[in-house]
Amino acid sequence: MKRYICRILSLCLILALLAGTVPAMAADPDGGACTVIGADLTNAQTEEVYRIFGIERGSVRELYMTNAEERSWLQGYVDDSVIGTASISCVYIRLLEQGAGTDVSVSNVTWCTEEMYRSALATAGVTDVRAVVTAPFSVSGTAALAGIYKAYETLTGQTLDEIAKQVGVQELTTTADLADQLGDLDASAIVGDLKAILSETKNMTDDELREQIRAVAADYNVTLNDYQVNQLLSLCRKMEGLSESELVEKIRNLQDTARRIGEAGEKAEQVKETVSSLADSLKTFFLKAADFFAGLFGRK
Image 1 (cartoon, rainbow, N blue to C red):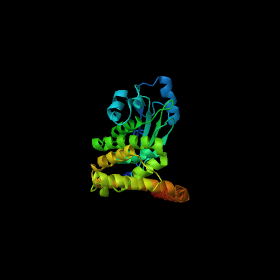
Image 2 (image 1 turned 30 degrees about the horizontal axis):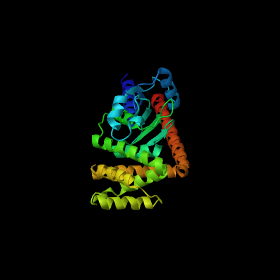
Image 3 (image 1 turned 120 degrees about the horizontal axis):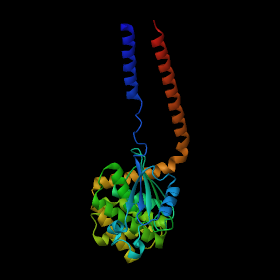
Image 4 (image 1 turned 135 degrees about the vertical axis):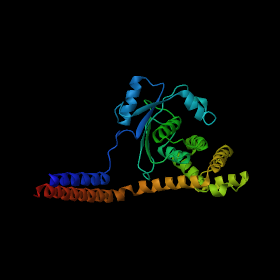
């Protein structure tokens, strides 16, 4: 009897050790994702949005965004006609592992590009997420940024810096406005370059900064009018008000994400090899564990 008790105790000890080496399954596999649905959509429109998301309604937490909430973020940055009187934009957010970067995809969005969202989210402090922005029909997409903020704060339990969120909204709307006149790539590139030199621009006078803005635009063979220059000057001054160390880190994260996207093709095979190697290692581990248990209970 004593021998069998010892075997049982040994088995319990081994199982406890194995529990420490095998990752625990999450109690709620969808706890890291949610949607934010425009409050003015019909049920049929909401179902269409979930079809675009590629998920079943009810599989993740569902939040809502009202037109009043959208206006609280957008008023003063975009024309009322762009905001409209109904909340239509929708987002699906999933948290990713730390260091994964920010992945954004859009559909039925006419004014904001994926790159504009990624850059504005980095400014606001939203990182390591997968975001899908859509609507049942074409919309400007500006209101979706507020939806992403709401989803991110709900999922993480963290409150983003209010000033950083406002600056993110200003960045998105300013870039989108410039893109109407300059093109998406030029507008995003100019704003990105200015973000990278904020430590220098904050020591410039307004006139010096205007000249710097024109010089950055000239690198892309773009000539800005006075209104566009002042738009970018206002944005730079707002971004300069953020914590310098945090902003530098946000810019670095954005650059890292861009680099990873560029390297995705050549790294694909490396990922496959790593997964294959891990699978072989796990297979060997469990075979050895099975032999061990067989030996343990086979002894007299």
